[in-house]
Length: 125
Length: 173
Image (cartoon, rainbow over all chains, first blue to last red; front, side):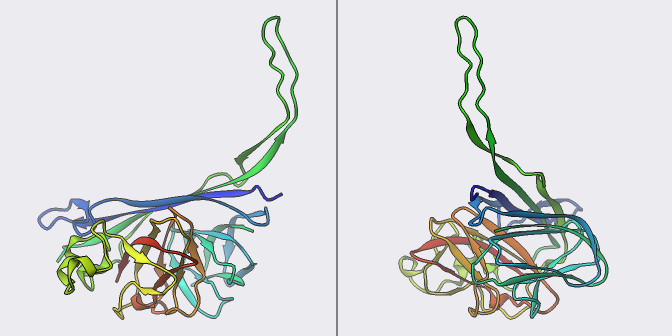
């Protein structure tokens, strides 16, 4: 089957602290909330979900994926490598998520931690 | 200069899979409820994923007004004629198969948000145009924080797989 799809959205609201109070406003440089979404088909029709899991080191090699979602549920910061562990470029603190489509050139994604973290992740192929 | 800044981030991921439904027969005196077999995409057993978070590591003072493609302040940096500059008034940056560096600033990247506003797929490089591991379909966006000192603001590039597109972005220290 190749009908599995992932509908995903990432949005952010930049906020700026008003100078004379403790009130946060929409950032005056950006001016609006930002968001985008897409519904993407998985080329191989496969979804793999890993529910809540404690990690203390490099976690599973996710190979040849079309899509990756990782959430740091709690604990120390999580780091993500898109090149089989050579370079960790993306950080997730507790409660933060990363979701993106992956180019076919990405061979292996590695999820690692600065100490002990609880994560969940989803990949699509 | 802002007193302080923060980012409220929200991600939603809904995986769906194709489910087959068998034909159902049934009728009343005046109505036929018979339904043929059909397929439908339903939310997978993983359920709806994602959530919200507040990120406070972003600096109150940014490297330049152009840290956001949406700020009108970036126009103060423009020294070429308005009709020949690649930014358009909406705050979108043009992208093509030729690489575009979002910023030449060398500070550590604390937060980046990129949205593909066009119709062609956009690819993202995090290592100065060497590889392009992330991609965005039309209308999609992604966001991420740099890990430690491993990712610099000037290492983020975008280009299209083919044709042209536009992106909007936040790239912050």
